[in-house]
Image 1 (cartoon, rainbow, N blue to C red):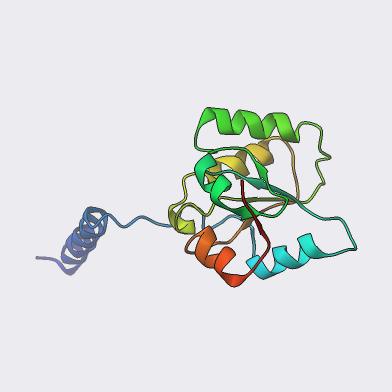
Image 2 (cartoon, rainbow, N blue to C red):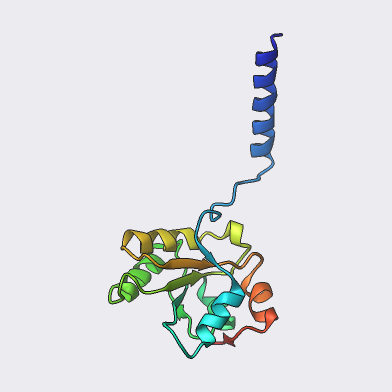
Length: 151
């Protein structure tokens, strides 16, 4: 067997094994992020323009605990969540700092972040960032003592 054919077969087998393992690339890897400590400082600051923070995940998790001042939009993976986000942001300036977050699951598996980000980009918002919660809201925000509201 020619070396180039053998190499192509090995690559094909590796690709099939990778796909069969259920591993997927992080669909949220390319989104502009803000770290938890940076957002906590921004929302607690008494100077400068504070970002508007939107929670784009499940209502039940928002009620259990959310970032102080965050507004509930509902799951952005669903049309009603996107519609609420569109309605709420219609009156905002497109250069307003906006932070979206979910935290329902690990960041690289979250189904709500990308749809919300894409909708805001489509609407013309230029300063949108995603709160990076690698594990979950509880682990990466609440357990670290950052400001939380309930209900």
